[in-house]
Image (cartoon, rainbow, N blue to C red; front, side):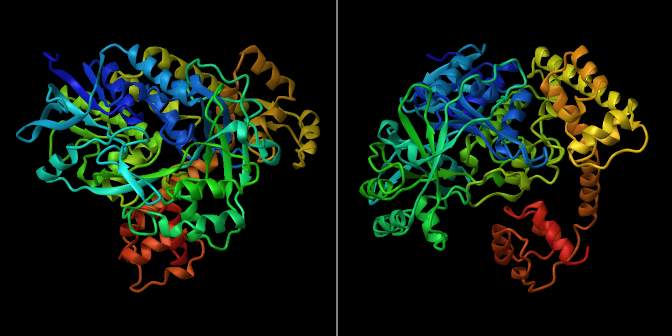
Length: 622
């Protein structure tokens, strides 16, 4: 069946595997995607959404580099929101609600239409090795498939164990078997491995819900999109809804705590800190009388609903009884209960920055196998692993993004240098250069580099160059053009901003916090310039950010330089971190446990953000 040697074999067809296969194939490598179920390529195993805080930036970076996640998301979206618009642009984060079935279909079609990609449905149980080099894989049927490199993207399937109350059974996802063999082989070679946990909430019948008792959560009035290419923004959108748990729900859930695998010792691994189960929330935040529940439709035409915020591994009867006490869920019908899943992962400190393992040459890891959580984190690692697998077998220099270049660079550097003992999730606070790493400029940062690699196509580069030129020209227009008090002061008065006494450059006036582009468009010369050049919203937004935030960017660079000079600052022995109220809870917990000797050591601890380090420095007068 397999008489050829592939350049790259990708094991697993989730978000990491799909991006890895696409990247390697688009760069010219003959690629085989081996997965246990071809119907589930790009499956959204948990919530039917892409993006969010920092995660949206990652999806835009994937798209800027020539990956598929942004395009697939746009083609399958049912709602779009730009989060944090009330804050500065470094915090703006796109998020899309998706049609789960269409998302997987679009991924499958995208890969089938990618030259150089072959498919095979079976479990990989073993790697073929020749000395310290991988040379292929062995399937559960004993078929040997040869290759020059292998990318493992096994997700939650390595010795996966599903928990629902006091019941447990093997599986990598509901209704799918676990994958065996690879962990045992890698352990025998000398790899360290551990166990992690994640969970998922019940899926319910939307026809059984009373939405009139819930708070509607509509999408943006003028929705944007993820891809920098010409995908279409949404015209129609589906609403989501919000409701809350209550004390009665909490008491009902507590009835099942003695049967909870989290509390009775059946689950020994650590779950994601920032996506806790409902029982964990009740236990950890006992002072709270309610928690938010987001009611998210699974697609355009299905009645299935995802109960975001109610992730649980409690017994199914407890789940059902408690959920029926949530407002709007009084008559709820279950499609399936929530569950927790434990799986094997390999501490990512065993990898190089190109995601190649240190022990076995040409073997790459991407996704949850590295201890991360989230579709976006997985997809970005898959993209980078696919790129670097292609480069390695062609004896080319690795493609590595630095922390000041991309959230993807922050993610991989955190994993490689700090490791993780709990599922790693990306946040804007993890990036010390986040004013530079905005969602709006991902193409300007990354598309030229990807084009040089041979991944981003010329069409993508030309779109980016056109945007960059038009934005720069518009900024120059504001720098070169003056406006008189007679034209400007009525506008400034409307926004409660101080009037000008004499003519001045528009750039300086536009830099004021209260003055928006909509205000500047009231000036005839600005309006004429925009209309004559047929400028689109993305160009206007980019120019506005460059005008209004140039000072913040300069300050951030200065702060980074200062932080580097102070890396050798000692932390007093026995320092009491509890006196620093501005420290995050996670940072305080980690610092108390590890007791770093210097600021440099503290900055390398997973969970201690750059803002936490700044708090320490301020307290020490530095």
